[in-house]
Structures are given as C-alpha cells and as structure tokens.
Image (tube, rainbow, N blue to C red):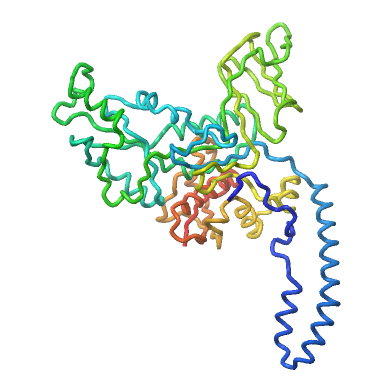
Length: 452
C-alpha cells in the first residue's frame, strides 16, 4: 500500500485474466516428467523454441487488443477517493501536500483541551487503541482507570473521539450537496481513537466549577502543562494504547470569498458565482461546502456554479481532495487505508453498462476490487433467512439514512473472509469496510461479514 491513489494495473498483467497462464513455466514442469535425457533435450528445443515463441507472440497481440478495448471502454477517473493514515504527533509534517489532519484542532492542543473539557472532566489527551474490534468492545466496558498526575492520585475516563466521526459525517453532507456519488470512507483508524479525561476531585466534585479553588487550578496546570507526568494504569490493555497519535487524510478545507470568483451573473433574484477549475490540478477533486447562503451547487465542465442571494460573500469553504501519489514523510509508516477500487476491464465494462450480474464471480470481483488485499480475502458466502446469533457490527456509513425497507425484513448475505495477516488489528475493520460498501450497492440483502 505504498500509494493510496495508484491504479496498480500498469498493464503489467492482463486486466481481464487476472492470473495469466505461464506457458514457459508449464512446459518446464512437463519436461521434468520425461526420464530420457535425450528426449528431454529434443522436447525442450522443440517446445520452447517453437510453441513457446508462438505463445509469447499471441499473448502480446492479445495485450495490444486489450489495451485498445480498454481505451474505448474508459470510465471517468475518480477525483474523490479518500486516503487515511495515522502518525505520531511529533512526526506530523505540515508541508506534506498530500495528507492533512482530519480534525484541524489536533494541531492546537490548548484549544482542543479547552473545547472538550466540561464539568464531567478535563481533557487530558487522545489515545489510539491498536487493537481488534473484539478487544475494543472489552476495553469500552471498563468505565474508569486509576492513575496519577505527578504525585497526586486521579481517576480517568474516556470517550470515543467524536470529532473524527463528525468530520466523516460532514464530508458526506458535502458530497450530498454537490451531487457526487458517495463511496464508503474506510474509518478503520478513526474508530480506534479515544479522548481521555481526568475526573473532578472525589472529595469535592463541585471544585472543578470554582475557578478560584487553588487545588483545582493546580490540577488544571498539571493536566495542561505536564502531560509526561500523567500515568494511567490501563492494565491488560496497556499494550494496545498508543499515545500522541493523530489521523490524517488527503483532504483539506480551504477558505474563499467572492473576490476569488469571476463576475457573478444575475437574473434579478439570484446570483450565480462561477468557481473556475482551469488553474487547478486536473486530477484533484473540488467540492463547495454547503451553508445557509448557498441555494444550489452545480458542477460543469471546468467550473463549479454556486447559486446564492448574496452578491458578495466571505468565509465560504471549498473541500480539496488530493489525488496525487501519497507522500510518505519520515514516520509515516502505517498502512494507508483507501477506498480506491482496483481497475480492470470487467469493472470498466460493468460500470459503463450499469450491469450488476450478482453472480458469485461478480460479487467476489467487486469485493476484491476494494483496497483490502493486504489484510483479507473473501472465501465464500451464504444466503440466509435470518442473521441468527451473529451480531451486526456498526457500519462505516452510520449517517446514511435510506432505510426504505427495514434490515430485519431482508434476507442476509453472509460473507466469509480469510485473514492474510493473521491477528492483524485492522482485519475486522476491513471486513466492516467491505460490508459497508456492499450495503450501499445491494439493497435487497442485509450484509454481514465474518472472519474464519
């Protein structure tokens, strides 16, 4: 996964036939079955020099034909694919032009602490739990952890880092208002972040509200300025906790105002502002963020038209999705999680024709086109009337509201996966990602996935 945006085919192998038949290797294996050495030498010369060369010539002709057909059945490049990474805070590279913080507040820890602290507790830090989904569930069942701040005892609680989930939900709204087809964002990293809080003093729970209280002020100073002196006893989960981590993705929100637009057009009631894309990177995606002043957003060739009642505006935002090859700065070592789909002739043809065969082969193809190959692969499937005792994991599109037919009334598409990296903490996240994307495409079934 060195590059989240790379096509990955490069015509190095046939797109139609994923695993091409190696004639030369086959001949070499069959030659070993000939015991007589003289006959083996004669057969090798005849077969490799004759049949082998003919086969290579024919294969090259088929490759040229395939490339011609691929060019004729071309689909538009996806300008809105996502790439996700996780890095240590000290390794964050602000001049890396391909990966940006999912939450801008992460680079301003003092403002973040101020915004998240409340009467229930003061924000301490955000941790990343490098654990599987089952271990996460057990971790979340523990409500508090003991610890110390310097020499003073304290009690710590945690909550899911909701700012990251809010960022994905906002992204969906931006796609929705721009009329762009939504593809599931792999939130495997985002789902494993937790905000840690120190509870108010047990002796006097109201002391956190009294700003003049000296003891509480000392606690606040300790929490804010002496993070290294905080020690939390996570017990058996200590081996999973990673401190000082932050998630990154290939998106940034950029401010713009009416001065950056061409002259607006008006019909007497509304203004249409034109945002030109001619000076932008052609392969990147640009989406206008909706607000109360924007009435309509239209994407046209080389420009975005924004309809509004305002002639002059400022502090609007545009979302820039970088599609260039992801740059790995120093310390950017974690696998990249993307929603890129592997290119192939069958995919191009089916998307061009809108064909959904729903055969076993087509289903498996659609699954393995997703960027999951380093972690899992699909082995089998079953159609069931009911899900049974297998719980349905939370999907990665929890904010999509299109439940015309309740899930309980649908038959179950039960997918069975095999781990390619046994025990990797992201394996079950990859299953959730596959199931979430398939659920967007397949409305007649309730999709469930398990690892066996």
